[in-house]
Length: 126
Image (cartoon, rainbow, N blue to C red; front, side):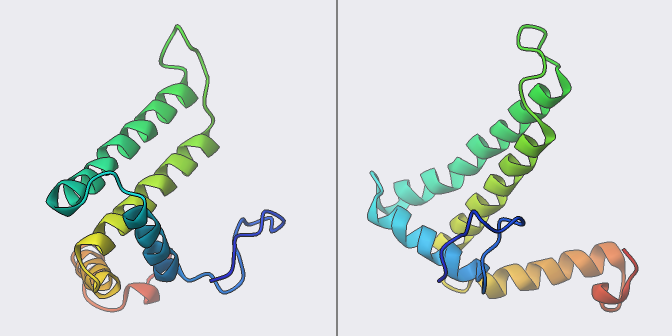
């Protein structure tokens, strides 16, 4: 896996492999976890709640809804927090099953079919 390059304006790296990166993060977390077994799995899934809370905090901060703090976040902060939610969810899914890429692809296809109707979602205008 290539390492991220901060020199790339899009923040990407050549040959980005989402599931390879997700699996590497899962292994790193497994190697450094304080709790294993069922408790560790439950805590990993609960991490999603923390990340979603950080999205809410960033939205509140970007809109200035807390009069004591004012505008203390940007919409770029919201984007970053949403990305943290996605990464955390993918790592949790990969922790539950080694078949995470196929599980996710099947689920995404069902959601697309249900939401976009029959046919290939890629053929529809954006």
